[in-house]
Image (cartoon, rainbow, N blue to C red; front, top):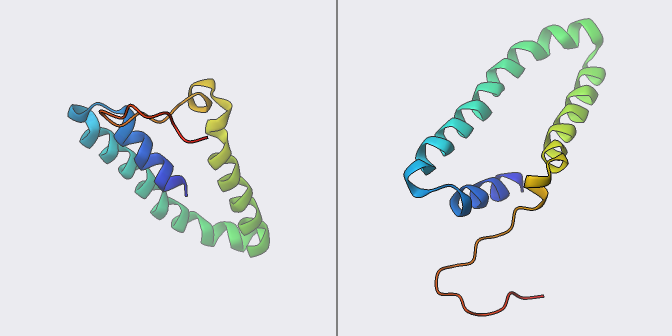
Length: 91
């Protein structure tokens, strides 16, 4: 779900000349976190137990998903209207 919102926001609000760079940077940061997490999960599970590590990872993941909503700019972001769309938006 967040991937759809991210891609839609990119396409609607990032200028065409910068879209590739912004998307690539976002993907790089997202994918770089995967091996970091994989490297840390084993030692952390051994030290603190698997359930605790999974529970903390779930809380951190949920917090990271909701954190952008703390920004007024993110909450106020509206969909761009399609070119030539003269109709009123659906309620």
